[in-house]
Image (cartoon, rainbow, N blue to C red):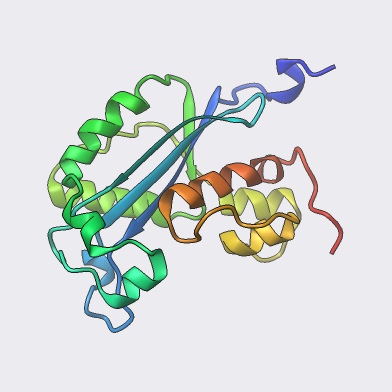
Length: 197
């Protein structure tokens, strides 16, 4: 019998908002960590009961501190200069994101590690805009490692392989990373066990 009561624990949210940000970056210190800016948001809304993706949001974002992407950044993310040149500003992206987000009332947001949590706050602070996500944040990488009894927290690609899956889409693209985090939620919530290695 698959009832909601059996699947959800008391106090568990109705949805998980899973987000992955891609940001300006360099391999030569020309873009300091404190000056990195979001250049893509990938977000999926997952129904807690079924762990199915029920909605998605994706947008590129035009950076202002370092408007020219480095070759390293383009190679890592596959995001092209033309993608960000034609993209909305951070504020415009939030204006599009908020109506999508606020259709859902009961959710916790999560990301693969805490980087995305800090990057969002850094961009909000720089642009002097309130953080649109008031919900609690959950580190899905940590939840995955704890639920599966792992001593080390794997990267997203490694976790996908550990689950016996093939990475869907392009790694280091926000929307594809968010979709793959969603595929790992059964393992992060302890509803599934990793196959024997």
